[in-house]
Image 1 (cartoon, rainbow, N blue to C red):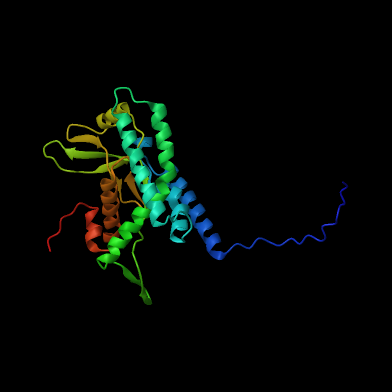
Image 2 (cartoon, helix red, strand yellow; image 1 turned 180 degrees about the vertical axis):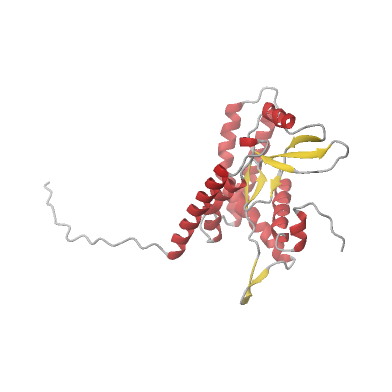
Amino acid sequence: MGFRFVPAGVVEYRPWRPPAWALLLVVASLTGTCLGIGIAALWPKGPVGDDEYQLWRWEANTLLDNAFARLGIGPDPDEEDGESALARYFELTSQIRGLYTAADPDEVAIEALTNERATFENDVERLLERYIDEAVDSVGLERGLPLFNAVRITWPPVDFELTNPPQLLVRSPRDEIKRDGDTLLKNDLTLRDIERLEAKTTDEDTVSIVVSIGGLAAYPAIVRDDRAFDSVLETASHEWVHHYFAFFPLGEQWGNGVTRKP
């Protein structure tokens, strides 16, 4: 059997012309990342130094995923697939937590189960976001778009990520129990790191302690990934309430820990 070569003809080269929104998204992402790197490099480090958690990195790392989700690009499981992913995700979470309680945790088994659980993470996030969005709609909290009041949306859009949240260093005066300042810390600190930072930020007038948190109202919100279903759903809903109130005077004061009289 012989082969006969056929001329391919003239190849036409066309310039790449991506949509304007795609270019804008890429430029915004690169600009935000460069600004964050510049600020992090020049901004003076506090008493915890390099152990401080940098929120700008979280925002930069999740920017594209967040934009794609808003455009409808990415996981969008139907009810049956979503429920199946949900059940398997929290079944794996229970197994992982059980392994951690053993006297000698099986690290290989924990890693295998954690990797399997990660395959369901995005579907679970989208399904729970849908649940929260439906709850918001049911109580009439959706808003009309400017100039298009007939179009009702949840604002801000429900968005969270299941992950290991940062830790929190809390400071209090010695003579009274009062939250007198706090600093987010990296989520991978060892017990020795924690003890060092507590000692470094404690003096004659101030006592410091490092605590774990269940979530953080960044955007997207950070929700602890090793909790049971009801805890995860409650935390994700709670963080969205922070997002919602951020557009009202109550939310502006909430972050300052200020109590106002009506």
